[in-house]
Amino acid sequence: MTRMWQRLHEVVAAMQGVNREQGRPASRPRPPRNVDSPYLTVEEAAAYCRRKPKTLLNHHSLGNVRLVTGTRPLLFRREDLDAWLTKRTSHRR
Image 1 (spheres, helix red, strand yellow):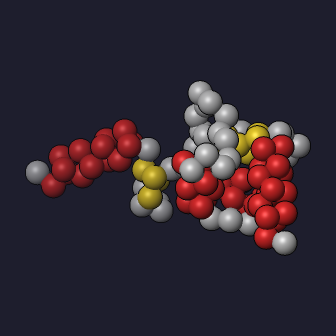
Image 2: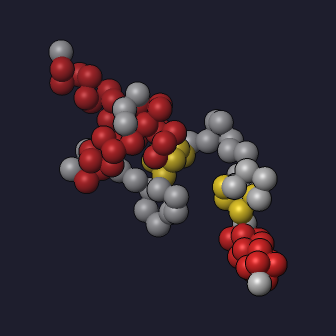
């Protein structure tokens, strides 16, 4: 009976893509992104602006920063971020 459960566990793990040696899901390799791309993901844009991703999404919901429409993952244009940062720093002076 235990042999059957062991086999069932192996089949389920294989279907879920779990790496048996490490006991965690196997990661899919991501294609390399073009560093000079005018489009940034939320995480890349947050690092670029030195803000948290949630902060950028909050500013988007307030209408301060635009996202590229119709894309998954969500993308920001670098020039929109530059304009937002310039406008933001000029108001603080």
